[in-house]
Length: 183
Image 1 (cartoon, rainbow, N blue to C red):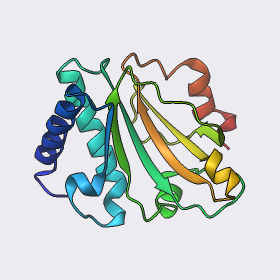
Image 2: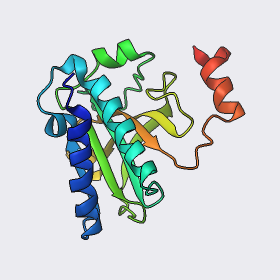
Image 3: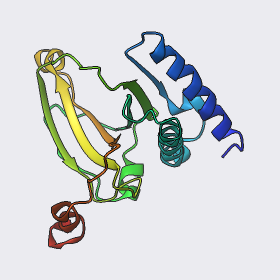
């Protein structure tokens, strides 16, 4: 990894926050657009670095309630029905990475996305990418109405959302992650 990654992430943060303060509703980039082209084998680690660094910047500036941050890691999909092939480990996830690099999304917290009819399946994963109760890692596959009508394939990804209030490590979630349901 390039030693300048944190500096580059900080520059992206400043540019993005300025765009949001000047009226943009949301901003996003692939990690390769932020950090430069990197081999696919490094994408997961670079994604976690981006997500944690940007979240730390939001916390430092006390902006974590003003903005929402999301990491999306696309997975290969050529299914025309929900496959529900949830990766069971980090290794399985890495094997299923798509050719599209992971993306970071930063938006104003008040932005409400317009509703689109969607066909989807989602569930938490048992290998949190960032072991912190403020981050929620989940699998989602979906397709919007235009994809349904045109009989296009589903989109699959692992997502990491940040919740400033935390509280995701509640009793049932811990039991699900560690208990007999861990499959």
